[in-house]
Image (cartoon, rainbow, N blue to C red; front, side, top):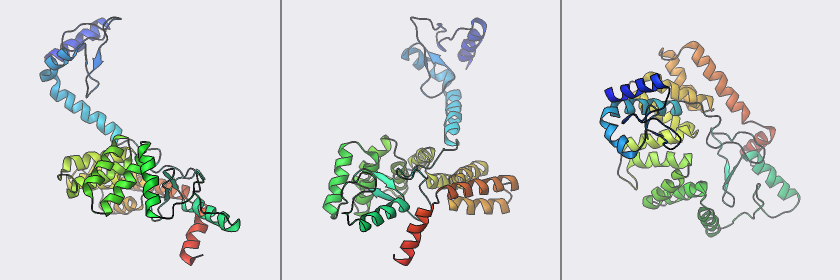
Length: 306
């Protein structure tokens, strides 16, 4: 660490940004690059970075963990599902599951789907997608054809969903491959499913480190259930503050399960009255944002068979 401190002192004295290894200053013809894992030091070349690594390793690892936590514990603006593309209201995450249109890979809320069905019945129209108006497939073969068309267009939602289908068929290797490709494109559901695959050892050797990594990636992308299970991991490790933070973030996204756990944490003294009250208010606001008369009508029709 002495060499890094010398470089820092030199920067403080001169006001120049310097290579942590050789102290050369950044000028027009010399551009320094940050360490691959942290933002503490810069280097003029790969050789300097490799030479300096033994002096920087522990500090780099500590700072990289801090940067990771800054990203991990940031409150997402919405869940990974986002809004219905038709009514623009947040999609629900508790109970009722939105419909996926395989023709366009759009998640459609029950309310908009129900309204589209009523319109088609009223006007005696053929069944079409509420979003893109593509004809609704009537056979498994047509569903697969839609999925493959979307996958050919590099659609991560289609990849993740076909992976789920392959898993249900017992083809874990294909499921793992599809989820891996979708996760590389940033799909939160794919990361979540990969975490389960690594937990169960399905299609891949069981690996808890990778399980947690994919849970974290899904949580960062707004997946509330991934966030919930991260809280459970932290609780098992006796890191109560981190567990509670995960559950509060998930509660603010509207996850009912997190509120139930936070209630127990409040009774056990792990959460203050103010923290629990704030989580309750945020949770209710998130749930209320997903409600609409159209969605309520759809839910009522499902119950009554209307």
